[in-house]
Amino acid sequence: MSKFSCLRIARLAARYPVRRTYATTSSDFVRIVEVGPRDGLQNEKQSIPVATKIELVNKLAQTGLKTIEAGSFVSPKWVPQMANSSQILEHVLAAPPTSPHAVTYQWLLPNVRGLDNFLSVWEAKATGKSDYPTPPPSPGSGQTPGTTNSHELSIFTAATETFTQKNTNCSIAESLRRFEPIMTRAKEMGLNVRAYISVALGCPYEGPNVDPHKVAELAVSLLEMGADEISVADTTGMGTAPKTAELLKTLSAAGIEKSDLALHFHDTYGQALVNSLVSLEHGIRTFDSAVAGLGGCPFSPGATGNVASEDLVHCFHSLGLKTGVDMEKLSEVGQWISYEIGRPNESRAGNATMAQMAKRKA
Ligand SMILES: CC(C)(COP(=O)([O-])OP(=O)([O-])OC[C@H]1O[C@@H](n2cnc3c(N)ncnc32)[C@H](O)[C@@H]1OP(=O)([O-])[O-])[C@@H](O)C(=O)NCCC(=O)NCCSC(=O)C[C@@](C)(O)CC(=O)[O-]
Image 1 (cartoon, protein in one colour):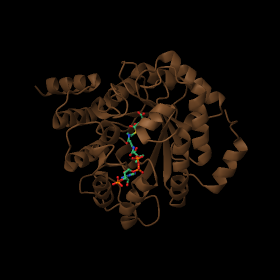
Image 2: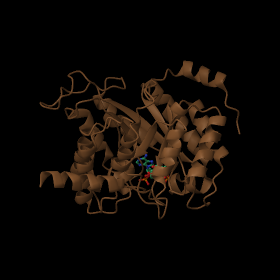
Image 3: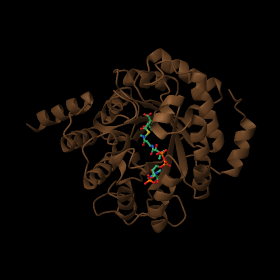
Image 4: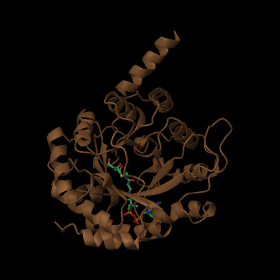
């Protein structure tokens, strides 16, 4: 494993001044990254109207969620469902915000072609800064005039060669080479970049025992390249409490700060909440999730959705932690999108909250 070099990081930090917006100042605050509109919807077989996707993004922004992964700029031949992401970006850039607080929107891309497609919309609207000058708030939104939403890019690779080939048609090394020009241009434009490492706790092709040192090696390479945050993904849901603890210890031993990490659990084996708690105890304060437990990766056969945002929020609130998310509003969004796309709401806490709300109204 390449040795984590603080000096090298310091040199890179000087080269690419990074807006460190992630590190939470208060240890009782947990940041939820809502990935429902991208990870949650990308695997849906029926084409979902762009208006529904935009409505989902808008509704989520009104629940108190402050980071939303809203779409991806990948090949439409590979993931047809995400083909209209540029329309979502256009909308988010042009429409008056509806939420009472600033929101960071994330956009996933695999290569320079994806970045070019993102920038063709972005550059037509932006002023060269990462923070797009947001139009005046909608009446009644409660948002402070002058509040600016911001945008970030997400790149993705994986801890096994087979998954990387299946997902992006290239080797791990080639995926990293593809990121270099993306990183350089993103930093020139002042855009933060988050990097996913998929199959960190089990691979659908190479099995459940993924080497945690490989994950750490990749995380170090991505941070050295300039990534602002690493999202460690249990794509298959094969992660267990001991495996999660071992992985987090290995990442720490490689010199990776907890504040540089997000954990991204899928709930295929029902272990996502347990693994989230293990991560929480380890000091992690950023978690990815999808409303209603939407999701699944098209290149991870059998994998089900992300951990449901409602379940995560309910669990964290029960521990006295703060997320800034309104559980009832979030549960309503989960029920709404499940109905819209014709699938069951996978969030137990969301369903229970809706039942309580119905009882109160009766
Ligand atoms: C990487 C490629 C493009 C390589 O795919 P390729 O076929 O090797 O690429 P190519 O360069 O030969 O291009 C093929 C065609 O796609 C076009 N193309 C090429 N790039 C783009 C682009 N960005 N946007 C739009 N079009 C693009 C390109 O122009 C060409 O069009 P043609 O000439 O045939 O008409 C492809 O494999 C791909 O798009 N893969 C993405 C797959 C994906 O989105 N997977 C799901 C997201 S990752 C995930 O879900 C995991 C995560 C993040 O949630 C965490 C976890 O849980 O693990």
